[in-house]
Image (cartoon, rainbow, N blue to C red; front, side):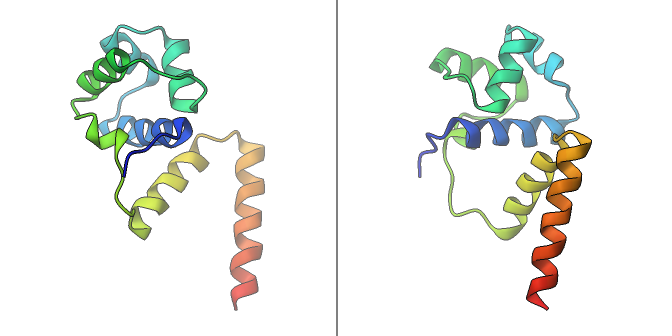
Length: 109
């Protein structure tokens, strides 16, 4: 399945970048982009040209398939994506999200 949601693509890029231990600035420099542009891409607020996608993939040493396609993700992959998104939150938003998750999990008991 082709991913057309810019936020989903940005989240995939975030996960891959974190897994590789790179900063946004490092990926941006390797891809020939400004730090701001790459940060906006990870946030899913910028529509990319194919050339930009290819340069980012080259910087991360991945294929475009890894960010543009998706099979039904396993629970583990979804969990990793959510954790990465949670870790990218500011402390206040992170605490709110954790409290919501805690309340939900308690409701299951």
